[in-house]
Each structure stands twice: as C-alpha cells, then as structure tokens.
Length: 85
Image 1 (cartoon, one colour):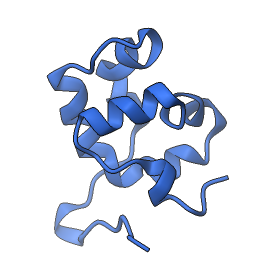
Image 2 (tube, helix red, strand yellow):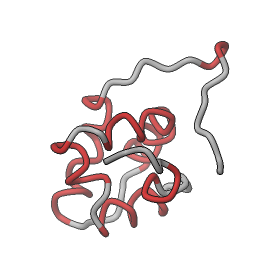
Image 3 (cartoon, helix red, strand yellow):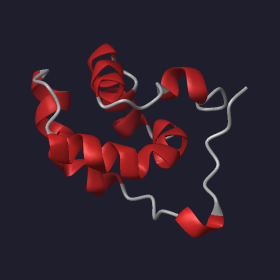
C-alpha cells in the first residue's frame, strides 16, 4: 500500500478552493489547464481528505475526475485512498 504522507518540510495547507482552476475541466470534461495541474500537484496529498467530503468526491472520484488527475500526472486517489468512504 502506498501512503500519501507529506514530509514536514513540504507541508501543504489543504484547501479545496485551491482547485478552482480545475472546475472547467471537472464540469465540462475539457482538458485540464496548466494552472489546474499545478494546483492538483500542490494539493495531491490532500486528495484522501477531499474524498471524505461527498461534494468534492463527486468531482474527484468520477471517471472524468480520475482522467483529469491522471492527465496531470498524479496517482489516482481512487486507488490510493483505501479508507475514503
């Protein structure tokens, strides 16, 4: 099992609003923009927490959400977050 732990020196503040540049991709199915991918990479260690929230899970755990995350080069939270409901 792979863990998404963040070393203390690289701690990130989890803020789903940081993913705002990704909303066009999540809502319309268009390709993710560079700012979207940058934000997803910055927030990737927060994905398991986001999946626990049904509002965010709807976007992140959908087929299009997984595609966007994968296109940005981030491991799919669907397979990384075994504890997320």
